[in-house]
Every structure is written in C-alpha cells, then in structure tokens.
Length: 435
Ligand code: SF4
Ligand code: SF4
Image 1: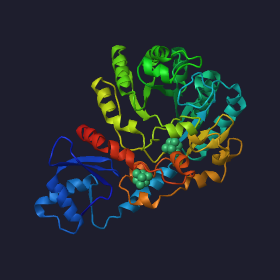
Image 2: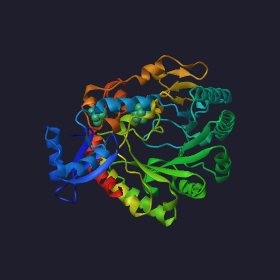
Image 3: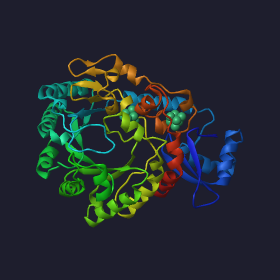
Image 4: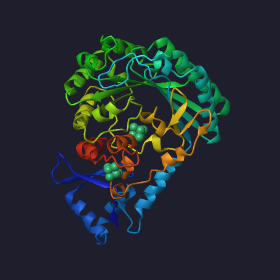
C-alpha cells in the first residue's frame, strides 16, 4: 500500500491532533488522527500494513487515499483527462449574441451599445443549424447552451430565435436541450421567461456586487443611474420560474456589503429561492485586457486577495439559508473539451469566451465549421510542474486565458497553487463537515 499522490493534507483548524485529507482525483474527504497519517507515510516508504490496520487501510483504499503499491495514478488520471476531453455525450456551446450592453461597469472596457455588434438573424440561423448537426454527428445525447452578451436581453428577438430553432432541431433529432442565460438582470421580464422556459431555458445567472450602494457604484446604467433595485425587483419576479444563480463579484473591500446583500435577500424572502450563490474575484489584470467577463466559473486568479474571503462568504450565505457549493475544483475547463464551442456574434468560433474577437484564437466559422486550429487548441498537454502537482485533477493546469495574459502564450502555466493554498484548508473543512 502507498498514499495517493493526489492527497492534499491540512491540519484540522479546530481539532489539534487531526489531519484533513482531500483526494483531488476522487473528490473524497476524510479526517484522520496524526498517527494514522504517519502510518500512511510509513506504508508509502515500504512498511507492511499490520493486521490490525487492515480494515482502516481498506477503507482508505475504497476512497482512493491509499492505493496498491503497483498503482500508476498518473496513467489513471491521463485516462480520466482524455475521457473528459473527448466526451461528446453532452455538446456545449456559448452564444455571444451581442457586444452591446446597457451598463457601464467600472471593471469593463466595453463602451455601451453598439448595434453593429449584434449577431444578425442569418448568422443566428446558420449557427443553430451547424450546432444541431454537429451535436447529432457527435452522437451527443444532450445539448447545453449558454446565451450571453454584452447584454443578451438587448436582443430578445435573437434570443428567442436561437431557443425556438434549437428546441425544434434537437427534438427532431432526439437530443435533450437546455439553455442558460447570463444577464445583468435589468431587463428580465417574467412573461418572456415563461415562454422561454417552454423552449428549454432552465437557468438564469445574474451578477450582484453587494448591497445597493456598492452594486450601484460598480454596475450602474450607462447614464450613471443605479441598477440594484431594478435587478432585485426583476429577480423576485422570476425566481420561481428557473434556477436562479447569483454571481457575486468579490473585491478587497466589498465583503461587508456582500453580507448586507445576503441580509437583504433574506428580508425579501429570496434566500431560499436562489438555486446557488457563487463568488468570483474581480480580476483587475484579466478584466483590463478582456472585453468579456464570460460564463466561465472556473477562472480564478491566485494573486487576488479577494479569494481569501471566499470561505467566510460561503459560511455567511449558508447561515442565511442561501445555497452555495463549496468545491475546490476549478478545472479543467470547457475550453479543453472537443465538443465545446463559443460562437461569437459574427459567426466566428472560439474555445473560450475570453478569447472571442481575437483573430489569432479563432478556431473556425459556423459557415465552414472547425478548422485545424480547433484540435491544436485542445492539445495543450500538461506542463512538467503540473505532472508533479497533487492539485492537477482539480486544476487541469490553470486557465488558458490567464496564461495568455500573464505569459503572452495560452500554452503557458498560470499556476493556481495560490488559490488552493489560500482557500484549501477552510474549503476542505466545510467539505468534511458535509460528508
Ligand atoms: S480558458 Fe480560462 S477563461 Fe477560458 S473557459 Fe477556461 S478557465 Fe475559463
Ligand atoms: S497550474 Fe499549478 S496548481 Fe494547477 S496543476 Fe499546474 S502546478 Fe498544479
């Protein structure tokens, strides 16, 4: 027997003499005494498992924390990773319907409404046709799309066109269809959503940056007016229709304001109706270089100080009956999946929404399909550092866009160890309590 190379160990913050173990390959969590932790080390060094330890060793083996001496865990991980990259059971696509937006967020470089950046109807129809055909040819059993902008609700006719056509095309082919809308929430309308829900829209993601004062400072309308009350009233009206996911942007100085937002959600009787609250750091470097905030939940930035507040935010939300998912896994992301595409308003295709609009990262067009650059983009492989890292299964080598921003090359390493080190101990403690 030997300890898994994918074990992550942390001393238990509240129980001296106990060690928390999180296995990144299997997602299992255990709390063990230091004595057992020491024995695991000795087994790895060649000590035999004693008869009285056998039951415990078998239990640890069943959750992947201890493995047979001859086990090749790197090969096992490679198999899992390759299966993830080539899995076509679900085809996923992101539609960027427009670059236009009705807000002037302080961390966004987009400047207002630009009609010319809308997807035109012909491109919409071709994109739908290409996508339904591609999912069918790939043998996918389901198609999941994300619709975003700019602000996608500025072009509701296009949104409806995509949903109507994809709903029809997928049902003709026997493919399950679901859609998620990412919106700033200012234009949400119950009647529209009722109709779109029948066409497969099952999730709406809205961003809030804190209570009214903080949110309005960060995310005002183009004329400077606050958006908070409009959004609160709109989400109250639709919360029972779809999965409502609230993304909360955390900066260094808005934690108290986020807690006041949680209080407000409770007062408005919304806490129990929110499918999930998610926390994202506001990433100065990345946002300054990207015109798009994207749908990606995985992207993080180890240098962000705001990340340190994540565990507290989870605890505060849960105290108020707001659901959050505590998960250390931040990768590998959809950009590395074969059956995944981002379709920009002009019909050009990319692997990740953060790259959309940059010619050098284009991997095809809906009129001609993927070109050779699609497979090239997938073939990033693992860096030497990552092969030695116990976080590899839940990191996947870091964000490709962050690597591009930091190193000028999407194939470089944008190491996320800082993230794991900052939140790992507290997250594993929460996960251990949930077990
Ligand atoms: S490359 Fe980065 S930004 Fe793009 S989908 Fe992956 S994690 Fe997200
Ligand atoms: S990017 Fe860093 S944290 Fe992620 S797998 Fe590689 S070495 Fe580990």
